[in-house]
Length: 237
Image (cartoon, rainbow, N blue to C red; front, side, top):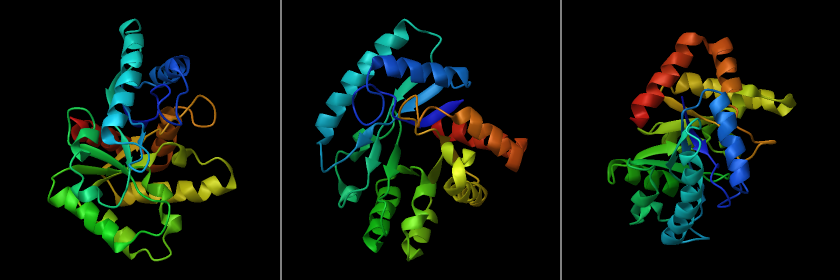
């Protein structure tokens, strides 16, 4: 089982604060049956250069893989990034360097605001001109900001893949129920999608794929869960 979206590398973003927390998060993933993890720290173009980000990630990844060398029981960790959309992203030359390791998969976080037509143009350019496989991070978190849903629908209709956070299927509290309903609707509308924990720590945003899988199997059925797994493995290769 694969967890594509995590903030598990130590000390690089608002995720794991140190290698001890990283070890605990990896243990939690292992205990839930995860064997492969994509480490996707935040990349903010307005804060850091691509080279600066890659240097920081390399250090955190090296520390993590040193841990893994002595802990063969823990999941494999693959380098990636969660790239916040920025104006000009379509033609940004170094963007392929932020794709998941040894792939053309680019995990993009869209703005938590009204989407504009130029955003659709840039995402389309990435897909059709640059031939990148765009994966939209935690797609269920954007709809509430779209007073006008036309661009939102245009982007989701593109030949891209959506990622849904595991926590949205678990739905704690009253507000969580509306997000859970949306998550299951998106799961129905996008048969080919990816499940990710988007874990940041061992407290309020801990690894939680197992609980989400139970919820999906209970509501959507074992066949839907199996199809989700099959697509994930096919998509990631």
